[in-house]
Length: 394
Image: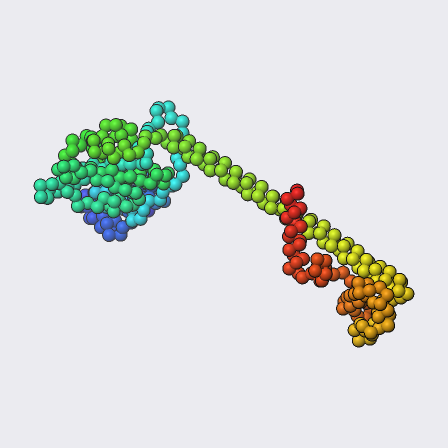
């Protein structure tokens, strides 16, 4: 409690305190409009109610200023009242307003819903003009002047005589644009410069007026303004919400379909991979059985030839080289000819090549057409050809 609470004070004392508080408010920059267009009393921040609309904070300041209880409070609030009564342009926020990009909540209206011009558009009237060289012009850079509301486009109205003092401000075609447009309209209403005041002003005021374009503006505006508004359509909030819901559902359905198609492709690729793996394993097993068979056949054939000639086993020299002058081999060539002789020599060379110490049969990939060991390239080519043939059959 200050020392002068509940005390009487003179008008001169009050005026001195008012001037000091007024200077503090002007120089300190402690009083500004909130981002949502409301105000806070800089002297009553501890109170429960802190956010006021313009007319409410003006009423609050006036009520406390006329209270006889406290010289200090009365002086501060009278200074606040003086600030509020001045041009509201001085109370603009230093940064862009905080915009809620969510669509407005649906409410059940007892009356017919308003229809707005879509995309969101606002009409600005009574823009200052000047007469130059017989034509009206404007020096105002409106888009920059309204930058805190993020306008997408500003179209000035011109005719044969020059600038008509009117403009249409277009906002983004989304819910963020809607809140920017509403905030734009409210900023003029707070200064009593909305559509109603423009109609009542009889166009004798020098200040700008602005409002959000609705159905009556779409049908009854100035011809030049109407032409610009007719680039859009008339929509209610509910219609836009339903349209947005339809688009969202369509997008979800499309994405679901795409995901299903991708899953089917992945499943098909997985099945093909499994089939290929199975085919390769089958082919490998077949190859293993068929080398084993060839080895047994080679072993049997050699044994048959040897038995027929009176041997079970052929004797190789220690150095692993077949002796072409061996008596048994020479007798084999004389009695049986070159064919059996070559078969026995080839068999012994292969046994000696792969395991000269034990000379037992091992498996080997074989090119029967050219009667030689198959190369890795030939084996891979054969595997691919076999897989493609199997896939076509399936």
